[in-house]
Figure 1 (tube, helix red, strand yellow):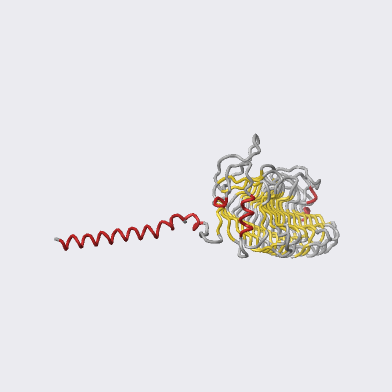
Figure 2 (cartoon, one colour):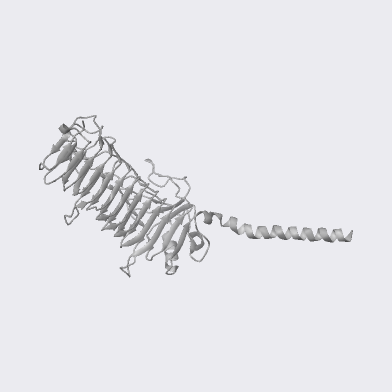
Length: 411
């Protein structure tokens, strides 16, 4: 009998040890599950803003000071700042003055919060939110002590929400390498994202709207990728504006009406504008223009977009119906396979205007026929060697240039 009691006791002790061991291993895993989902781990490079004194839902408290303290404490390898769910008010800029800094939220709390009866932030919607005081830049990338490029900055899964429709959401004042913006909501600010001299920036899966200008890449940029976003500007601004971009991709975006131009590019080269759904109320939906030095772009592809005028209004910059929904000052542009809906335009409109350039190709586009026009495609002097095929009838082609500009009409 004693042997049975001893054996049972040993078995019981082994079972207790096994349970304790499982709990010891499992509990930290469960406590860190949210961080694991976000791709983070609790280590020396991880900073939860609550651990450093951040205060949610306190309009008078400036949480930017907490962010800046954390960034100043980071070493040369940078780190990740975590924003939990809550409304964190920002009354001065968050200043990123070094490379390899990531700011990651719990989720973007997808909600516009714009109410005509109350311009302030509305309750609900959840998510990690930075609520930005009127006229303030929420996040600024700038190292005042060095002119070297800042690299490897990432923003993911939170919302930047302005108190008024001004200020800037994210601004890079100096040149940058590989700024990544993913799953962000930026709204009710003056400019959503403004990057200067950006190499390989990626703006994706985000909602940047209810802004004067959604995305502005100024100076010059290379390898910019603007993909799978919902974007919208206002009549005083432009949805996507880029200066001197090279090897860029604007793909798969849904671009809302209201902006004076949906896509306005100065001196673009070797870029692709494809598979976007674009609506507007004005001419100049896509514009390829000269830069301040008079340089014109070349080698760009505009393909497979659905472009429509939802309701026609006089252009805020007084551009007439002959300006064209697409206005091209560039060479070697290939405009192919676009669905261009012109039902809301008045008679005599231009869908595509080639203002100047050489060897531009316009092929297999479908241009709406609700209203007649003898100038669906206009080619102006001094354009040369423009070829139009399978897009319009001969009586819809207006050639104001030389005989090298040719339309091969629809049957």
